[in-house]
Length: 310
Image (tube, rainbow, N blue to C red; front, side):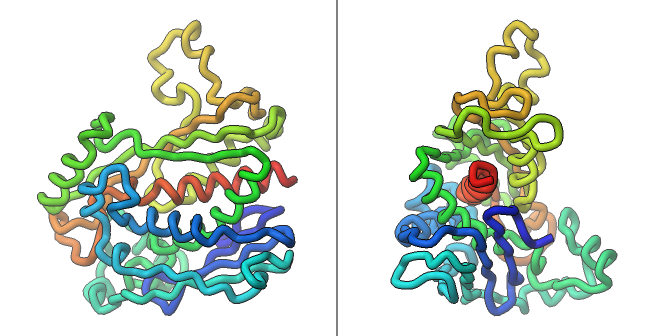
């Protein structure tokens, strides 16, 4: 499916090397004055611009295409003079620096670790131009939609903040720069872990059994390209802890319901499988987790807004 949510329904469309990517967002209330500066800032973070990153030298390892795309949002409907009308909001972001010819060699080859093969097996056809819909280029639309959700949540006192907390096995942020730079110099890639903190979620948010709050969050976060794992509270790290210690950290959720404390979760992103060292041509990231931070925030915002607005 290409649609997320029930109350705030976000539909994503477009391919990596098509004319544009974009989205339709339905359910946004009328009268919301859009914070265009926030959208610009978040799109710049997603593109990996060095001055928006905590590890600017490491940001040199992001896709050169991402750095060159202007990512200008064109609002097609639902907005008048910067204020929402309460009708469906449609927007596009034109692909200005697409180079489909870079991927001509993939017309008859599958890249290891990508969705190339399964897309063709499922549909009988695939967009070989950089992965088409499976490309992380698609996440720019999520960031735009997530910014609108962030604005509404902020008015309710709900704040979402994510950060890169681990690169490879290194958890000292002061060393991320050097590590990513070194990996890029070798023509390789490395994975990372992002931590997200949600403050201000009302106590009682979420439902037991099949509608647990953490289940909704995991569903949203695991939809992001390259995400391979989700945990909250002590999570996987708590396996080695005795129960007397592990039960002190809920991660803000108990029994699927928000307990009033900050909700904290982590998600892991795999190393980019397409690298020069692997013999794959194209413009790729040395560490996709660097650019995934605002995407994690965006999907978290869309998820929480859908729940608190239900």
